[in-house]
Length: 336
Image (cartoon, rainbow, N blue to C red; front, side):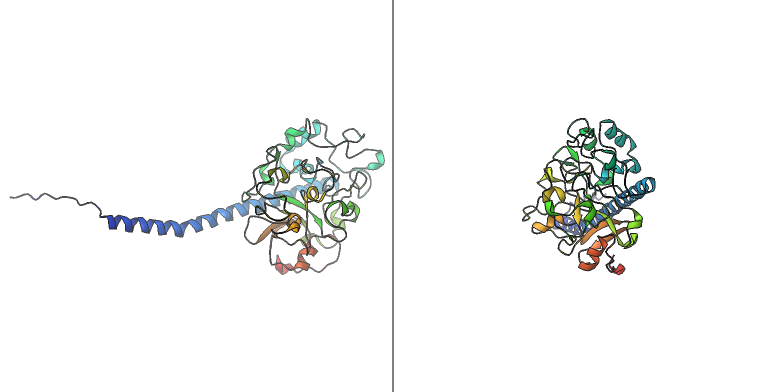
């Protein structure tokens, strides 16, 4: 019998091109889906961070019957609410390290709406009551340098360190709306602000808020919201990707900003106001707005501990009402 030799033929060039084209199409179809899943996971992590921050603020309130002061003074290098709630974010050792380094005591005392009590002569802006900046310029630097995942949104495009030194945050306090006052040195004293976390305009105005004072309702009052970098070259913006020295810091006011200028103020607080809508990323007002890398809006933790996504299209009046604690403004709950 004759045997027949079988030879295997190679793929033709056309067949190879067809296979490559099919693979490319499949990748093109799958990549957006993978990116959506990845962003959904990042957004969920971000939401959980805000939830933990809300629990931290409430646990602090349970301990001291008041929320912490937003920031202790309007100068740079001052500790803020992000430091005060460290023990309730499973960061007790870091908090202890900061206290041992000589930082100001971070608990309320004194009068019903003051923190801490100035009646005893304690100067909140001094390590020993004699004045000077309370910050992270010496021994406390190692504390402020710490990168804390609970303060960082996975979707963010900023580096993890501000000025290559200090741990960043993507979550800033709601100072209220812009009535009365305006950003910068013209903004009102803490006792005149209408948000849940207040900026102390000087050593003797460390106003704090209790839940009983939130008469608009805790479910209708935002406390902390997301922030992120703005597009490079945005007119008037200090918070582009390239300006890493200006990235907000979880510990308090960024030492890159001096005094009570508008850029320092907006580095630790933002407005919820018709003039500063969520997601605004053009013009000088964008520095005072909440925004995120999530599509279409940003997430906020409310005074009742719930987390909500506020879309760019939210009613301006509703958005402004959510930023205040006791103005009596009507809130349309269907928008969040």
